[in-house]
Amino acid sequence: MRALEQRGIPRLVVNGRLTDRSLKRGGRLLRRAASRLSLVATRDEESLTAFLRLGAPRVQLGGNLKADLPPPRPLPTCWSALRSGWSPFPVLVAGNTVEGEEPAILDAWRAAQAKNPGLRLILAPRQPRRFEAVAELLLGGGIPFHRASQPWPEGAEWNHFQVLLLDTLGDLAGAYAEGTVALVGGGWAATGGHNPLEPVRAGVPTLLGPGYLNFEDLVPPLAEAGLLRVVSLAELEAGLALTLAQAPLRPIQPGALPAALTGALERTMNLITPYLP
Image (cartoon, rainbow, N blue to C red):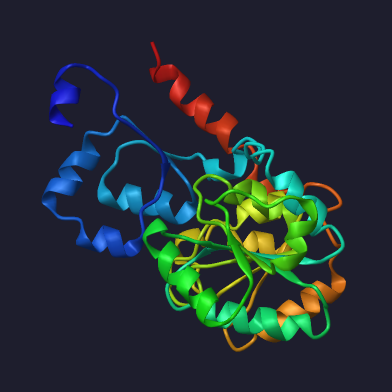
């Protein structure tokens, strides 16, 4: 930071997030570095206050840039076979699951099948290193599944599979739109949670766990707008059953985010433009 300052190069932080916990761990070196920042465009009000307390001289609210991301890339053409084969059935998409969550999700999915015959599941573990362990879990449960990393079956063959194990990278955001209901992992067996905006923007009713520490700026306004529900592990089975009963088979239209969450890209660009050559 000192070298950048000596060379007259602006030092900007965008989409900045700083929690009280991180602030308390910040020592003299972190405070000295913060004092050299030209601008901090924070993700939320809490971070704005924290950066000011840290000693950053100019701090503005930029907003969460995740809310202004472009639409996800189209899914590969092989997905058309699954789309055709599973078209009559409701589909549960469980994304970014972490260790300890898959057994509970599978239990809730099995229970929901009693009232939703043919209910399919797209299961996407968060970390690639866990793909094999989750595949073994499905095998051990006697569940007919296909791995997305393997050659894809043709149309009618998908009737033999109840689960797609999404063990590829970059497809989950687009896969949410193939679902009836979405579960966002990371909040049942952990505390940080994962991004709920992807299924919400796809127009899919969304459930997530109470551990959403990393997304405290997003979850409350989305829940207040009725775009997602926070349910405990004990409530997951009942919450899934209720949501499936009320949801259309596939999203009718993309979801519209609350106005308070939009416009972050434009605000951030306005803030950083004076520093650009």
